[in-house]
Length: 88
Image (tube, rainbow, N blue to C red; front, side, top):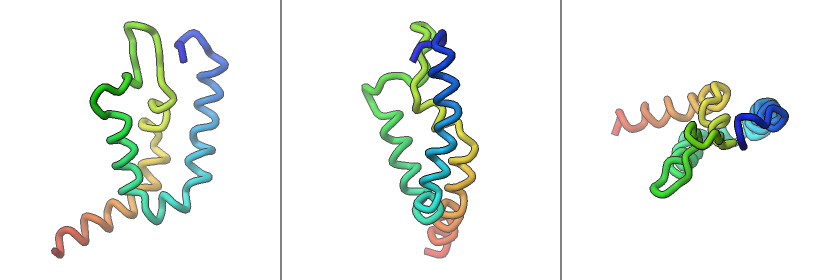
């Protein structure tokens, strides 16, 4: 999407939290591995930038990565994974 496409940006801002909320049961159960794999996919080698200021483009992934709702829903499984890794 281009920065100038205000309608698409507004739609993306509105629909990303809805999509995250729909997937919330999965994120509450397996959020840490899902989020880790998603971030690995987004930031992999040879992947297009999610925010390209030179060309004036923004990816839909930017809204997902910066969403506090995603972070909040993945927090229980991340803390459980840390607890398990500490206990050995």
